[in-house]
Image (tube, rainbow, N blue to C red; front, side, top):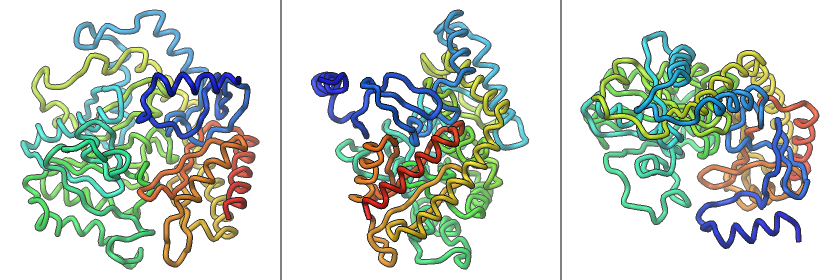
Length: 432
């Protein structure tokens, strides 16, 4: 019996089925953009632990930083005995996040915790309760984060009741426009709709925050027109609403910018980061305008593990690695190359209805028919399986589960990239 079969048996016996697995793989080692399983098979990783490994698996600087910090102290709880890595990382994020104004940062453990804390802070600061989120958005699996998340199955189904005072409006999904318009002649109707939303759904003076992903992750890498967020931000400013950008998946160089907000030329009041922030160590950050972040009373924010020193050390090393290895430029180059390859595939295979994304955060939306845009969910599932069998790890996503998203490490080597793209095309050919 293979080792993976033994482990699969253990997994079935001891771990609930609700904890999903995309692939039947058990990892033995991972380095750069490669994963090796317990049976010795090697895979090219186009998933990056769902956007966590932008700098690559086991990057030397990060491993060294983790080891060095762990040898000093692993946990004291920042609320009990403070430590320097927390302060250093807060200062660094205050400097590198968009916006030339005083900022403050606090830390939590996961993306969902960052979302929950961002909303808490916005509500406290504004003394309002309403939160506007978007269709196709994903913000996590805890109660409030799950309430903000759009897709019902599997994330919300059977887990109600949900948190109150959450309102949802259509996002700028140009390929499937909710308003039947076509960009650029649409006048960015999806953003202007917010004015109607304040009349028909919730009064602006009752809204604490609007929360959005600059590029929707789980929703299908939906990327709005560049003008979209500027219009939303203007309306937030007009009405005293906190504008929160959830950059948990799109941040840390994923789009070729340190934060995707930079591409859209907006300065969020609060920006949320996690995933690739600490290269796999549990850490999330809530960074925002100093007057907003400093509003809650002493003791109102925190958590036992938030800003763990080992995780903070890893995050500082991530920022160093991005800067010293010029990974933002590499990401931009990678984005151009992969987009070119995807557009070429689109010209060959009718199943590809849309190619979209920003920088190397790219996706293919698969459809049964380009005119009707009927989602090709079964074909996407099959493509993921074929790629896996050939040694490539990819992920599907989207409300219809028909989108293939690409999250390979920015440090991927050219031969690995070329082989991965070749496998993807082989899979598409089989599926078609």
